[in-house]
Length: 318
Ligand SMILES: [Cu+2]
Image 1 (cartoon, rainbow, N blue to C red):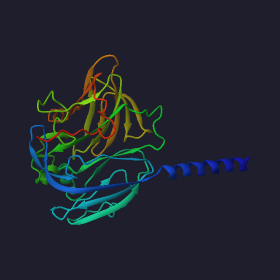
Image 2 (image 1 turned 90 degrees about the vertical axis):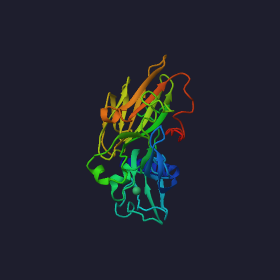
Image 3 (image 1 turned 60 degrees about the vertical axis):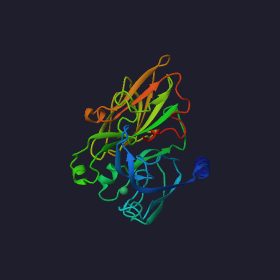
Image 4 (image 1 turned 90 degrees about the horizontal axis):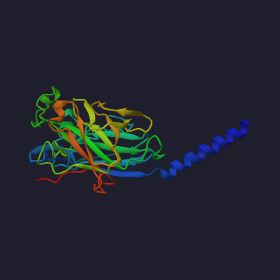
C-alpha cells in the first residue's frame, strides 16, 4: 500500500513537473527609459514626464505563472537621470536586479513569475517618489497556469486602469514627499481619460455588452494616497486581491487599494438593457480631479474593446 501510494505520488509529481516544463516559456521584455513630454489631459496640456517607452503608464506585460521574464532596461545616454525597474512580481535582490541604471547603460535580468496575480512595476531610482509621480509605472499580469475556473471565471472583457497622482511642478520632489501640489488624478496617464461626462474633451469610454463580466486590473500608482475603488451604479461581483484566484471577496461596494497595490475587480451588468457605470476613486478630491472612468454596457459595444491588446485604451494626442 505504502509503495503503491509512493509510486502514485511520484508519477503525479513527475507528471506535474513535466506539464510545467512544457508550458513555461521565456518572455523577452525590453523597455527604454524616456525623459520626454507627454499629454496629461484631454485638452492637450503637456507635462515633463519620465516614462517607460514614452508613455504613461508603460506597456502591459502579460505572462503565465511559471514563465521566465528576460528583462532589459535601456537608459539612453541622452537622458539626465538614472532609472531602474522594480517588478512587484519578482523575488530577487533589491540591490542587484533593481539597481539604478545610469544614462548610457543597459540592465539585464531574469526572474520567474512564480505567483499568479496582478502586480505593479515602477522605477525605483532616487528620488523614487518623483520617478513614480512623473510616470514610470505599469502593470504585469501573471495569469494562473491552471487557467480559469468556476471561482476565477473567464471575463468577457478586461481593462487595465492605473491611477496616478499628477504633480504639475515635476521638478519639486520635496513637495511630492509632503503630498503637496498635486492637482489631479491620472487614469492611464490622463485626467478624465474615459469620462466625457466631466470632461467634454474626452474622446474615449470603456465598452461592454449587457450581462458581460468585465474585469478591471487596477493599480494604485499614487505616491501617497490610497484609493477607494467603487463602481457607481454597480457592485463588484468579485474582488481578487492582488489579482490572485486564491484571494476572493464577493459583493463589494468599495475596495480600498493601498499605494502600490494591484487588484482585479469584476462587474457584471444587468442583462436586457443598456446601463452605464462610473468606475471611481470615491475619495472626492481624486474623483473630481480625474479619477472617473465611464463604462457603457450596450448591445452595440465594439466587439474588439477590452479584448486582446485592447485592454489599455489610449486616447490619441491633440
Ligand atoms: Cu526613473
